[in-house]
Length: 121
Image 1 (cartoon, helix red, strand yellow):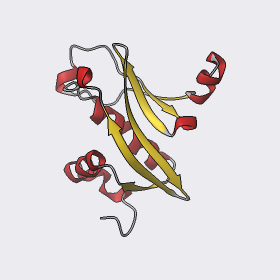
Image 2 (cartoon, rainbow, N blue to C red):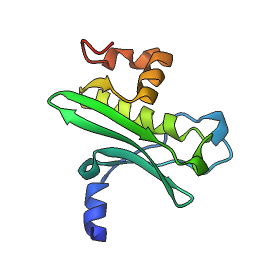
Image 3 (cartoon, rainbow, N blue to C red):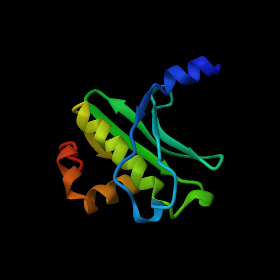
Image 4 (tube, rainbow, N blue to C red):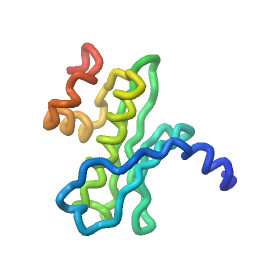
C-alpha cells in the first residue's frame, strides 16, 4: 500500500482517552481508525496493537483485540476499546461484543452498556 493510501485509510485519528495509571510515564497515545482494515490500532515501540471489527448495518461487531506480549500491561487494550466504543456512540452504532475482552470491558464499565445491541446481552 502506498504511503498516500495509508494516510487516506488512517485519516480518522482518535484522540488520547483518559489516562491509565500504567500509562502515566508513557508518551501520549494516538489511536488510529483504519476503516480499510476495519480496525482501531496503535503502534508503539515497533509493535501494533489492534481491535478488529466488522460492520453489519447499524451494528459494529468487535471480533478480536490483540496486544503483543511486548506491550502488555500498559493499558493499550483499554485505550483501543474506549476509542472504538466512542466511535460507536458517535456514529450511533449498536455494539456486538463478540470479542471476550470487549465483552468483559463493557461489563466492568457500565457507561458503555447502553451501546449493546438487543439480543446480545
